[in-house]
Length: 417
Image 1 (cartoon, rainbow, N blue to C red):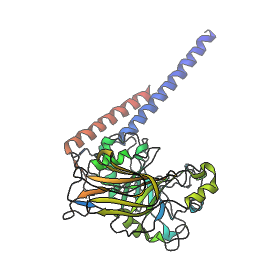
Image 2 (cartoon, rainbow, N blue to C red):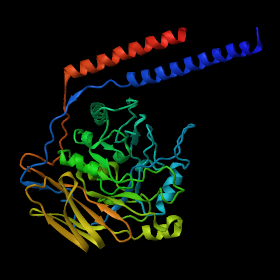
Image 3 (cartoon, rainbow, N blue to C red):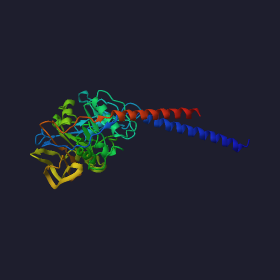
C-alpha cells in the first residue's frame, strides 16, 4: 500500500473521531439545556399602572436631617476551592471598604453563603444563578442555598418561576444587574412580579429604563446600587456604587460600628424603602488618597417625602439638576442649579421617582412614590404571582421530555457508530 494511502486512512479515521466527539458534546450540551428547562407556564396579566387617590411615601418615617448608613450588598470575596472571582478574603475586603466610609458590607458570593468575620454582623446572603445568561438574583435571609437553575432561562415564565421558588425560601429577592442581563428585556420586566428590589445603575447608563418598564406596568420595587465587587485593587471597581440606609447605624464611627444594625432592623429598612441609591465617581482615577478624601464628603438627602400631592427633596449640596421621572421613563420636571425641588403629581402620573445629578459626578436615585389606595392597601407592592396555565405547562414540559428523549437517542446512536 502506498505510504500516502496509509496516512490518508489515519487522517480520515482521526477526523471521524473528532467529528463524532464534537457531535456528542454538542448533543450533550443541548440535552443539558433541555433537562434544566422545565417550568410552569404563566398567564401574565395585562399591565395595570398604579392607581388610587393616595401617594405612597417610602420615606414617611424619616425625620428631616436624618443620617444615613452607607452599604454595599453586592460583594464577592475569595471562597474555598479553585473557582474564585475575587482573590481578596472577606476580612481584606472589609478593610478596603472601611477606607471609603462604608458602614454595612454583606458578602454575596455565587451560590454560597459566606460567614461574616463577626458573627453578630452576619447577613445570610448569596447571589443565585449558574445560568449562561447572567440572570442573577440576590437572596436575603435564606438558611441554605437553593441550587436549582435553568441553564438558559430564555422565557419570562422560567424567570418568574425562579423568583417564586426563591421567594418561598428567603426574606427578600433582588433582581441583579438587569442592564447586563441578556434576554431580560423591558417586555419581560413588564411581566415579572414577586421580587422586592432591583439593582440600579449596573452599567454606564444612569437612565434605569428597565426600572421604569417594571414600574410603568404596575410592578413596584425599591432600587439599590452596589459595586458587584470582584477586584478591590482596582479603583474603578470599588466604592463607585452604594445604598444609603436610614438605620440605627446612622451614628457610627467604624465599619459596621459598635452600634451596628441587626439583620431584623436591616430587613425592616429594606422592606420599608427608607433608603436611596447612589453612583459615585472613581474619584482620583487611581489616586487612592484622593479617592479616600472625596468619599468622606458625599452629598446626602437632607429631607424627602410627600406634601399633599407634591413630591419634594432637599439635598445637602447644590445639584446641577434634579429630575422627576414618571410613566415610561418620561421626564416630567427638571430643575437646575438647586439643592431642593418639588413636583406636583398630576392625574397621569402613576409613579414619580427622583434623580439628582451632582457637580462632582455623583448621582442620587430616590425610591419611587406611587399611587395607591391607603384604605385598602398598605403599599403599591403586589405580592401575588401570575396564574399558571395548566394546559400550556403540560404541553411545554411534555415537549421538553420528547426533545430530551430524541437527543438521548441521537447521542446513543452516535456513540455506537
